Length: 339
Image 1 (cartoon, rainbow, N blue to C red):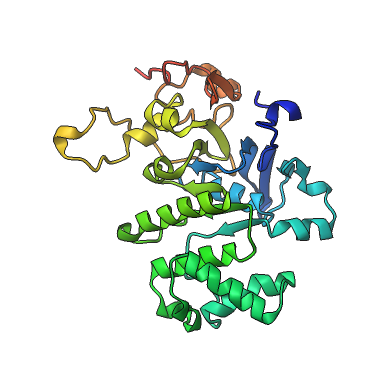
Image 2 (cartoon, rainbow, N blue to C red; image 1 turned 45 degrees about the horizontal axis):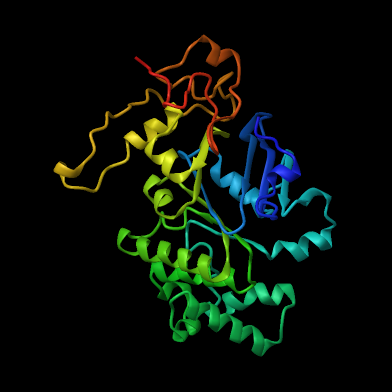
């Protein structure tokens, strides 16, 4: 199991910036069914790191991201900010600490009020927090705008007058106005043209170095995770199946699902430079989170599934240093052979 004492969790005298401990989030449907969006998710995000969370649509990664910043309440389990359990905080204490934990959404246009100018949108978080005078809020807003790579003239414009890349920079600037410690980035480049993705990702890296920010970077794009993350976790149907340093996970995965994801990733290289790798084709669609398979949830699509996979849920185990995997038959040499 992944549970460790507080002393073991502390690295270099620091508690994790954010911790999910057996985080479970279920949604009750009108007909009485329950959507199991996340089950027993455990991880710790270290101060100053970028923690990538990847998986297919429906894997539960965005649900976890929203819970990390208090937009969703866990059904069970705990979320801790620097060792403090959110559930044990008073309403006022949580409100005070909440501004340290921000989220940037996938759709940059939907995240902005079309009736507000950009300057008004940037000042809104400061106004709600009761922070500073009107002049101070304007100054902070313009400083955040400039740091996000946009000219001051943008402040007088409305969202529909900006490009997608500019709007996402505005959303980044808005998050910066309250000086957060931790930011959840939920598919922040998925809706952008390929030509502007690199500049946005580089901006995140610059801001992290300048302000010491900690990120949870949610995406379905493995190339994005490899570019920006220090560590990465892989989710499938509400459960975490693999977690470790980005290099080992993306170059030598231990779980068959991660292996399949990587085999499907296109290689933007000339044919003579491409690595020879066999495509792993998964049969069937991802099952419904209302009635997930028993045991290992990946077993219905796994080429190496055996009887045990349907009888027992695999626990996360550390097969290599800081490299965890939830598979009965994975070894340090790689995922089980499905032949």
